[in-house]
Image (cartoon, rainbow, N blue to C red):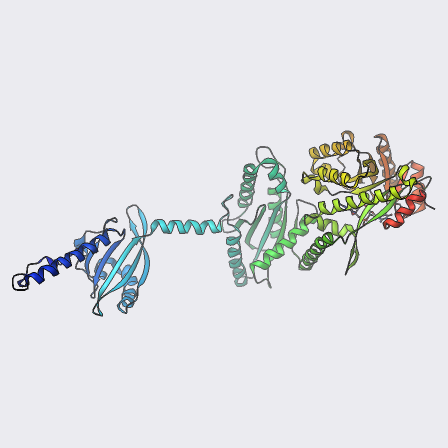
Length: 588
Ligand code: C2E
Ligand code: MG
Ligand code: MG
């Protein structure tokens, strides 16, 4: 410790010469030891230490590792206010008052130095002798690195590591501020665009996570490029982004922005020009919206609607979506439970030869007798199952149930064991996104001991659109396993028909929408005729779906479409009834 006054212990006084010499020497030795201990203690500390007396004068200091900013002569003996400048003194004065009362006080401050700005913390503790206040001990520490680290951690807590964009935490914070601003400036509009990349998870698996990250950064860059600096683009989750933009004059402006974001996202990505689409939920921030959580909930509901329509589109939030989202959520939970407890059932609809009314097969259709809502149509709950990731489990449950039923029918009468008939089962396109499909089918066939020729797999055209390569592989393997395949709902939406030429498909099912205006509407008649010819030309078995009247059946006979399915021949029915019809082999 360096003092500005000389140490009394180093001074020869009268005391050292008289009869108390021995006592004096002892005291001096003790004092020297004390001082050495204090010195060692201070040496061990990396901090700067200052001692200020009760008049706030610097009386001594210690600095081992930290160099002094100013030479000692500039502060020793001077008062704090004289040396440290008004800003630091303003921090010091109230702290000093508290320390005088016996408290320990800490504060921090920045100082500009040659190498830049550095941060220091000061800890002031009181110095009392015999309960009398002598001054303060100020321990000063350079906390620049610590602070930088804290700032980095704070930044990481609010930044997405892959894209460098704000994350959900920061986005919600900005959204909250925007909601407040909107309340103060109600004349302009603000909006949140909640973006979800369609099927990104599958793409990510296929191209590898590094490439996936490149695409995510590209998405962030494209969104940012369309916005003003004061708007916010954030990455909220794996393939979810959100845009917050303010200052729109009208809903039309917001729509234009949604169009631009949508168009930018739907351009091919990366050097391989990968095609990726995005869906978007849009929420206009308006009263009575009160919280960021509500805006995000609404945006998710709008996004779900956008996803359900055609992919690659956006949808604005309307309040009824909330109820719909809640209903879907409830349905999803109920469905999960229904699968667990085996609440679902399988019905069977006959497929009939038009001329003879012979029953050649059945289509298995899942049914859900909901305990409260009654029978729910698969058209309602299959999309929910797809969205909730439950559809593969559901389909395989149906398939196993059908296999067992087939075994039961075969063993019930010899007629059924010998006659050729089959049951077709519907499978969702989602199976093509997971590698377990074929193995699961094989396991079920093995478990139930059913022969593959009794079964047909119904798939829709979307499989070929979305999984062109994989579809070929899977269909070839299904064929190898002895399972024949039906192309369901043919003509309904996609119609890139090249796949018909080189894929092992056995049955074409003409979508029921085409039969609706037949007979009578010549154009519809022609379409059904051409589709039938197309199927026959490719040596496929053609089934017309949705036959409701004799006139339709008659029309099909005249164009040579041999097989049909529809309410006219029989509605989907429980297994007991279907079994009877199968045994009869012929409709009455
Ligand atoms: P789909 O495979 O095209 O099945 C034919 C649908 O048309 C059935 O509706 C059937 O009841 C209905 N239908 C049959 N004849 C007529 C008719 O003459 N007129 C009218 N208007 N409709 C008729 P359902 O049972 O409601 O099934 C709807 C869709 O749900 C099915 O269409 C299929 O895509 C899907 N689905 C059914 N069961 C399953 C399943 O186990 N798994 C999967 N993934 N999807 C299934
Ligand atoms: Mg079907
Ligand atoms: Mg169909």
